[in-house]
Length: 167
Image (tube, rainbow, N blue to C red; front, side, top):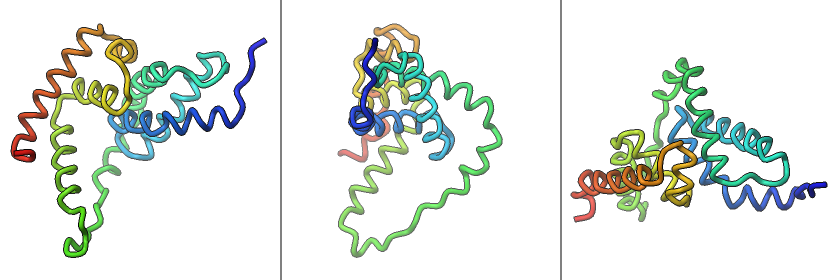
């Protein structure tokens, strides 16, 4: 008989992984709310596939997010209009000591968004997800060499796009 994990064990697992899953889901979803829903559904589906025998492997959750996002996008085309209504709050730069950091972060985010989708997802899984190329390959159904190549090409492209930011 399998031992079921305690709520505290699940909470520890979620504390360790939820931000990585959400970041990856944001790359796939069209809004923050969709990303949260996508992540939650993927965790539940991965836990079911794992037989509810404890928190599923992170690579399984990433792969489930990837698969579900494809289906999700097909069903939710009507949500794109809602995304364009997002407005960023304006802050007074005179009293904000982190303006430069936020500007740099915005430029980097802009550069990442210019990358082809296949590069963005590998960057997200490698940098923020902490996965190995083998785990990325499993998650995206590609070879480890392809995952490594996409990561290398993405970094090269980011260097070009952010050249003036870091010189």
